Image (cartoon, rainbow, N blue to C red; front, top):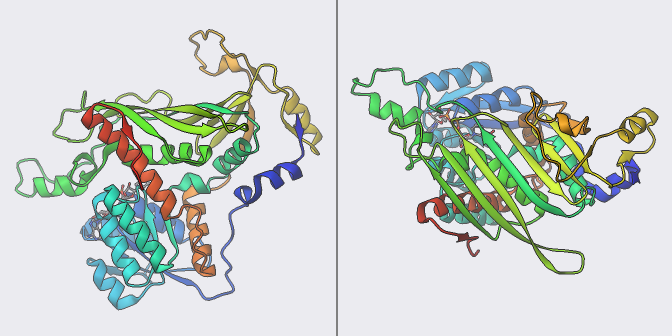
Length: 419
Ligand SMILES: NC(=O)c1ccc[n+]([C@@H]2O[C@H](COP(=O)([O-])OP(=O)(O)OC[C@H]3O[C@@H](n4cnc5c(N)ncnc54)[C@H](O)[C@@H]3O)[C@@H](O)[C@H]2O)c1
């Protein structure tokens, strides 16, 4: 099968549109950042590289983090400890929010109420009730709203999603995704355990480990990858069964250090017949093998995706996919690897060796955190509420990850919640 780039682009439509670039000739977009910890600092650094952004303020209620955020933002940015004071005094046009999950709803709702456009880090909200309320509020406000699921801005994922939509890997039959790491997920607390301030600081800095503030691995990591599954399959899961626990890091944390989920999606084929796609998702804090990646398995091929690399492995017997128009590329593609389905794999130093050289579908030239912000700023400028990751996407993603946690707690299948 030879597909011209033109045909492919037409099929893929807007999904492949390159990141829109903020128009700098207009007046700058006045942006404030609330939450200047790890992620907030990344966002600030990215914002300072985007033309047409005026970073007017940063806010954090933990002095060392505020100091760090202010340093990255530059001297023009005012500093605030209380975000309500910032909203009242400075009247930013857009607010970027990177606070712990349990505060997402409250701060985002306050910013929308105050009339500002909002970029909110993932996962959209701590609870489904909050996510539903926030989605309704976004719609009523007619404000630009984007959730920070940056794979939606990543060239590799956009390319891969368009390839799936164009039928290039056939019918999707299964998805496998994981985020495996080998570290405690614990941040150092700057006072000893015996210090009277330790409990407060521990919860402040290690909020991820406590259920009152966090939804654990599914919210912090799985939200990115289950969003890829929802996006590529064009729907949300029908049900899930999951198992998880604290098996290794018995250090007082309350969230699981490992979780395994089996999701079922119900789709319809070209003849309107229902079929099920199963998605396996695991996240580990105690073994880093395979890292973070998604594998989309179709009847004609498989897409292996990471934020920096996208590979296509074609099934044996399927026609080689190639781009027309570039002779060298065409020749290279013709020699692309063909995966032999069902082959027993031998352990090897190179786990991909049995597959030969795959066909690289794209490489990430930029930084998807910056790209998602470029897109957000562009939507703010154009007053276009159809962002690349709107409140409905955020709500579906939130429901998808929370149902897995619910399944672990109840020990049975959980259906996708009714709207
Ligand atoms: N998209 C991604 O790849 C990505 C990566 C990491 C984190 N995140 C998300 O970003 C968010 C923040 O995560 P993090 O790792 O930066 O956590 P963090 O603990 O490093 O930073 C959170 C900051 O919010 C501040 N904060 C808490 N309450 C506040 C309040 N009322 N007003 C102002 N500031 C307040 C804290 O003091 C802290 O500095 C989380 O929702 C997380 O899931 C997203």
